[in-house]
Amino acid sequence: EPLAEEGSQLAAAVAEAGGVPQLELWAGERPFSEPPPRVAEAARETDLCIFISQEPRSDEAGTRIALNDIVRAHGGRELYSGLIDRRLLEDELSRPAPDLEAPARSLLDQLEGRQTVRVTTPAGTDLTFKIGDRRWQTDCTPIEPGEFHNYPHGEVYVSPLEDGAEGVLVAD
Image 1 (cartoon, rainbow, N blue to C red):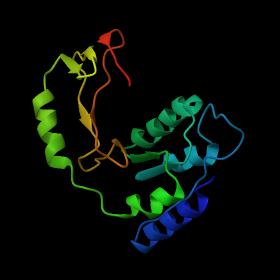
Image 2 (spheres, one colour):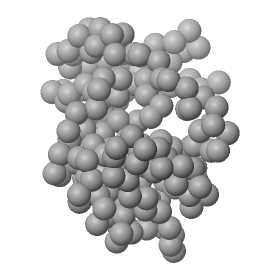
Image 3 (cartoon, rainbow, N blue to C red):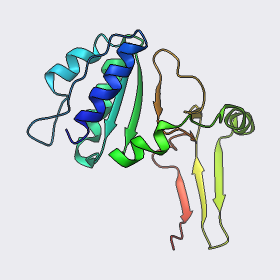
């Protein structure tokens, strides 16, 4: 709701570019245990869902995942932008995004087939994560049907196995 005006501007830009926008608000009594009905209905038909949230709630993470599942079930795509405010939209996010596809693909090539990953830092972090056969992903490549990306982008990521972390994390 706090970004409804900006959402309206984005919808107008989509229409100007020849798209058919539909603006739905993640509004109502919180927390949501499922996506609001109008949002879920729109998600069932959309080619691209752009979810912009100023203050994403951790107690609604599962609900956002459920929305993403609805969008992707029919080959739709979702861009998720969390912790976004008016100033960020008008400034940094109004500029063209850097092209990070080549470095992301290079990193994916280096990580392909890795069953474990070790992270160390000069501060003393020494963590080993078991990956198993899980697929490495990135949000730096063009978004294909059925995919989800964060925006702004810049990640190469994987979910480690639930019982697959061992070591020390130093946060200073």
